[in-house]
Image (cartoon, rainbow, N blue to C red; front, side, top):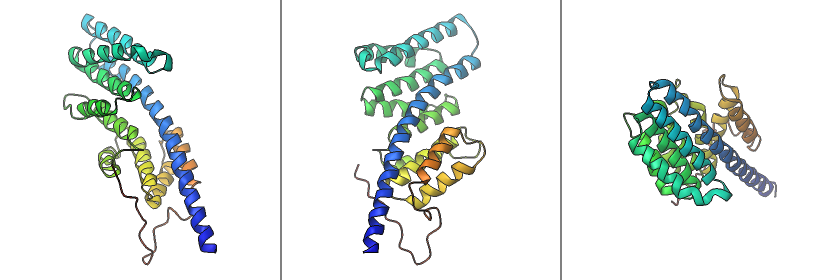
Length: 241
């Protein structure tokens, strides 16, 4: 009987971990939209202040504002107009604004349920060798983050691992998503190891640190310890994508 109760408790912990993971993934998605908006200043700083650049900046801000409204329940009718405005900028604006427009377009496409188009748009930024590496990495991260609940966890993990270098500005956010993928597939040992590191490592944003600490409370106390040599390997849920 104790074994049965232990198994039930473990299942409840796992379900709570997945629930918290979904909740924090949603918050992280909202944060990513703000980060995309914040990169606008990065592009403005990089490019010269000319009439063409100023016009492109004004057009991008107008399109982004329309996209923000289109993503609300009362503004869905503006979706096609926002997509058209961002799509035009993505092909006709100066190079930096083209990248920003594609990032904002992908976010809007996802919000409107156009998931395949959104993933393709993010991928176009990732593959753009002329774009700043920081924005290419941001596209990779955002796409993986949006798919963390439904996408192929093996493929997503491979994409995210390219962002975990010690100098990558998106490192802690990428590791956060990797931990959520590990939880989703039942790999609690690796998930706990990552989350414990995120709670202790200097420089990790407070929101990610808090998420990691909360998720750790849902796991067994020994989850972050290496399995013993005679222990059976952790079961990983198969992917049925």
